[in-house]
Image 1 (tube, rainbow, N blue to C red):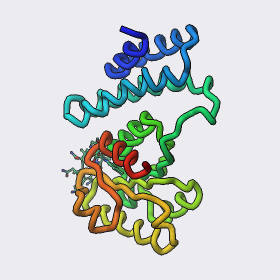
Image 2 (cartoon, helix red, strand yellow):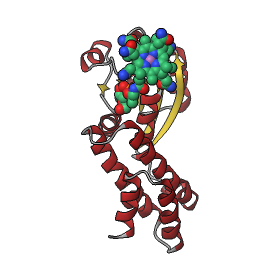
Image 3 (cartoon, rainbow, N blue to C red):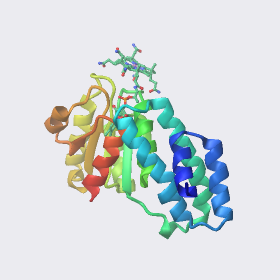
Image 4 (cartoon, rainbow, N blue to C red):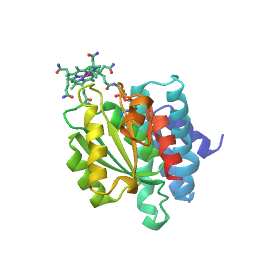
Length: 210
Ligand code: B12
């Protein structure tokens, strides 16, 4: 097995100690940092995404894998000039007003970061005005909104309306998710997409930005 395959396997198994050791060994051996990321760390995380979606991996395991991947990325990052670091796009994300649930959102963030997206995570309890301010400030290609309460879902609609009012709606793609959200609700409020899990959310972003 090549070092790239071993590193991918280490990420899949969520072994962050192993990720640190092997990434450092590869750096010391002069392996190209971008290859370490793409063919080792991200390759592993891609498999995790597929398995999670298929129900073959669960939340705690995915979090361990994401942590293993981050451990490797942190070592490699300083060796890569900013211009070389591939960015898949910029995503502004937050849990909507009145809602404090963020475990799923964090998972989405981790999965997207693993796929090379630049993420601005506004946090929880984010009102429409704060999303609007975030769009003006960060100019993301995609906004992601998360809601776990049926009572807070409507804040997603308010945010879409607030973006329209500010003339910003057509500058971003809007995606939504969270346990009570459906494709029907996304269509109803005029969002560009819905995803039921973090892996699908990442694919959706790729598709919307492409
Ligand atoms: C953990 C939890 C909490 C924790 C939250 C901790 C935290 N930091 O997040 C605490 C204890 C704080 C909490 C509080 C409350 N909770 Co609560 N909570 C849950 C619980 C058990 C799990 C949620 C979770 O983390 N799931 C795991 C993650 C991985 O799944 P997920 O969030 O769905 O995310 C995935 C997808 O939805 C998607 N996704 C998520 N976000 C996004 C965003 C985008 C853009 C996209 C594309 C995709 C996407 O990808 C994620 C990963 O695959 C659920 C029950 C359940 N089984 O869902 C109740 C639940 C959501 N809670 C509920 C309630 C009622 C409350 C409280 C009102 C309880 C109370 N009386 O105080 C408060 C509300 C606080 C508030 N204002 O938000 C109800 C909601 C009922 C309803 N229909 O509205 C639920 C369903 C429990 C129940 N059966 O009654 N809760």
